[in-house]
Length: 151
Image 1 (cartoon, rainbow, N blue to C red):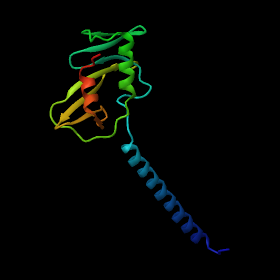
Image 2 (tube, rainbow, N blue to C red):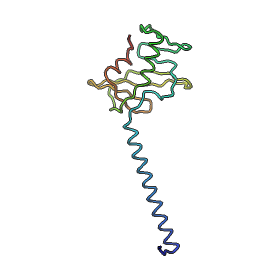
Image 3 (cartoon, one colour):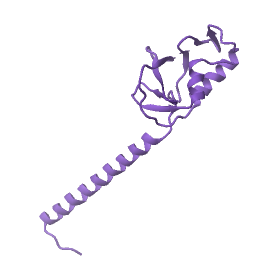
Image 4 (cartoon, one colour):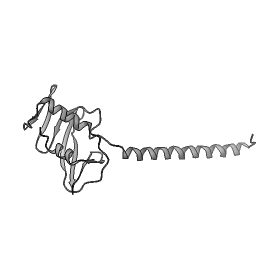
């Protein structure tokens, strides 16, 4: 066993604490890097959508059903499926878009202000900017679907 003075043991404790702090910091940094690379949904999983408004249309919850304005040619169950599909998308992180965005607004239960998502199209690349500033990649089909849901 080591024979250290009280000052020596204090130094050992200080060095061990510094090593533990460094390890915890590196683990947190690695976790944040992994989190940034992970696919994300457009909305939080627990979000209850009340209204989803596109550039020239709106889908709103009426009781247990849905209706669109102007009429998109989809019945209530098809509108519900569309909303559920949009909420179920897991999108990869993407690059920042340029130009003027097309904005969609989503009203969620329990929030006074809508969530605004900017949709960008640049040279065949499609992306969405979340309110947090995070960018997500969209496919051309997803981009078109968000602009004008059709049967």
